[in-house]
Amino acid sequence: MTRHDRTWTTQPEAAALVAATLDGALAAVPQAQALATRLRDDIGVRLMDILDYISLPDGSDVSAFVGAGWEPDAGDPTILRNPTGLFPVVLTRGRGTVIGFKVEYAHEFAAAQGLTTPIEGAMHAPFRRVRFAEADGVAFDAIERRGSRGFEPDDPSAATLRAAQLHLQTFRTRRRAFDSVGAAYDATDAMVAAAVADLGQDWACWLWLRAEREYWESRNAVGRLQKARQDAHGIGWANQDHHTYDSSREWFHRCVGVLEALGFECRELFYAGDAAGWGSQILEQPAIGSVIFADIDLAPDELDIDFAHMQLEPLPFLRRAGLWCGLHGESMLEAGINHLECMYDHVQLARQLEGEGVSFMQPFSDFPHLYQALSVGEWWAVDPARVDALERAGYITAEAAEDFRLYGSIGSHLENLERNDGFKGFNQPGIDGVLRVLDPRKNLVGA
Image (tube, rainbow, N blue to C red):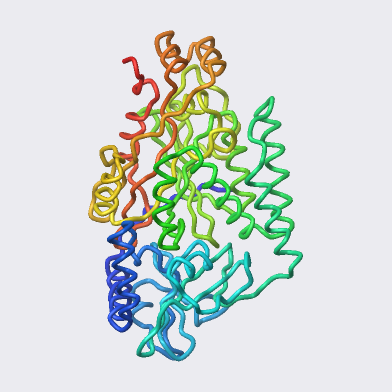
């Protein structure tokens, strides 16, 4: 695997084109406009952020979209994608305009919205669709994808659907604690390989991330609260942007290996080097559009190396990711993901959750095109045996060790993320700052 670097930029022309198309469709369908208002006012979610596709009538002039960055698919010129940022697919097929928007589960959306329209696609199939509303030649459809790259239902066999459910249950109930981390990764690799063999990478990846979010929710009260709020409207985590994994240095290449087996591809590498002693490999799964932020400790001189595919030796010191894993376990294993990031109207979400007693940290990105703020961390108990090992190795002081033993340490978060103008990147200086703040040694109860 070669290193991939990319500098993402805002795409205001493309974003304005999508917004104008969506606004015109909403004006034609009052029921859809009411839904968009409810999502924003009740749970902080913008319909713009969960668009799946815009389908225009067959033969429509799409030159404006092409001029703004959309490109025809090599295998089907009626499908246009924009690789410059976060934008819906544009289709030219059918007689009217259809706005497809993402939901996690079509049947839950239908139930929450009181729909009686039949759902297209078998239960648990990779692509399902339900008509939400239509008027004046414009329709809004809720789209459920489980790794599907298509735009029409294509139900697999009953045996394959059963296999998918079994693999989901296996991911949900997988053993996370072993006598050695190596044995844990061996078991995880085998489990993922079996799912990929039966279902392919894309479907297996969707099931994996669903189970990972459920495990994270079980350990994060803010996540459970916001999930329940979004479930009340039937969208689930349709607005998820990325999942963050922490890993110790020795096992980072194995963490990346699991993700690559699920179809994730390496994107940017972040190196903070002597600035903060950390690095991040960003990965993206092209079929489901999900992103992973994988964090690791780096030495000041470890610049411009492909740390995602090297077995790195332990350092004589631990930075934030290494210490977090030392206290709680690997994100891929016992600890689960560090945080889930979802797209919102950040002001609305913060105000709404403040009314529920939830506080957010100071934002580490605050730009017109990118806003990021973590919820105040969930506090987790720490196994005293883990603390003892860290103290014996000289990674933490006796004072910090006793604090971790008696009071635990900072665990996981929900991230309030807002993106505008299609911006797909991240803010490395801001991440550097928040990682310093989140170092467990700077969050001692007795300090």
